[in-house]
Image (cartoon, rainbow over all chains, first blue to last red; front, side, top):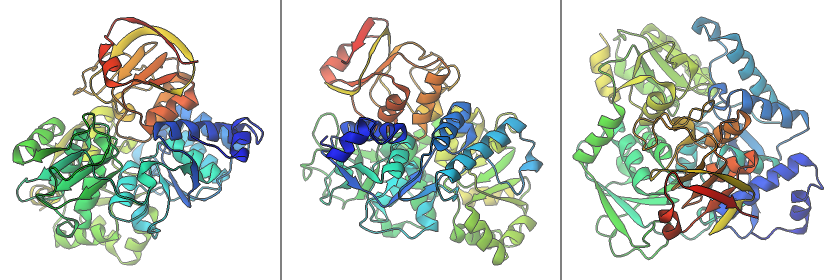
Length: 404
Length: 120
């Protein structure tokens, strides 16, 4: 990758050790994406916020760079943390977690980062169409590229941090104007799809794409999907693979028409069927419990429409067990003004801001044995990282089984 | 062949045919693979030359790689077939040598063999 004179100087340490580290990260990112140069980005979204995921080592790293003067140069927003400060005392988290989490939030604030604590920046901020951004949260990167017309790599926590500090990112394939067809097309033929099916489609397609940066999807179009289904698909895809983008292609155009070099191993286009059988296999892998001790909704976090839709679908019924609803702070505030929060609480929900189903210590194995959810992304991390069983079913079935 | 993070490392090869989601599938304290559906389930990546197709999943996996290094449970070096940003930047910040190999050379490496990874 070619660096300009000032960039070379920064890499050599002439602008301090923070800039040097940031440029080292950008160079590794550039080599990994075969980029020839760096370009400006206008927004960075960081992951690496939840104390549960980055731990003491991550907390010390952030404290160290913020105390040495690290500052972000472009608008920078943040992923969820581990809990909602409004209610943290009710959940019996240890002091180490609460203070570690507070230190992480303080370090980001000192760097000039907006404390958004949300994995759905595309829903709570205006998306800059056609602009270059650097989103580390995988579902948000895929959403930005696939639905919102922005451009980003599937950034890592460190590449997004380096882009926030420098205002730059490598000009990779995903950032270019021209659309390249992927080497892999997944044909959606599962019947009567709900949001769980789309989450599984994303998970399946991300895995089958085998290290590629994008994948084509046929048999379905964006107009057939609601917001919940779109988010579920992005969340599932971000969990299983390296894809940062998918394109909907028309049926019949997927074979033979692909001359691109999207990154598959063979270089030859391939179409893979996602049918009822493939869906069942994904479900068998992640659906590991008969029933959950608690219901968790929101991975990705719920937006305002989903809060209102949930309340409407409840129609005065109440959950028979605890139901945790995760959303961004701004959504919780709006929902409170619209009286949704009161309605949901009356139906037995706990509405939590700033955190998410994924890897929240509120849903750790010391708290619950199994969780009921409609999120493929949540199911993967609960099964594998949290050691919690998962009862996986779509929202409609959750409402049917778990309310009275 | 491409060097993403320079350095020198020696160790025993631990090879997987499956991508690794460092956040969801590796215990950041012990280096043990915790994903029951993974072919390295129950094995530790500590001090190995970890050979796998690519990283996958969460962007926060970069911090997991850094935490493994801080806690002394990181691989000595890594070899992938496909570059991904989580592994590349995690290794860059942690100072773990990382090399990308083409399919033929990647396929030739076997678990248990001693390997000197010298990217300089």
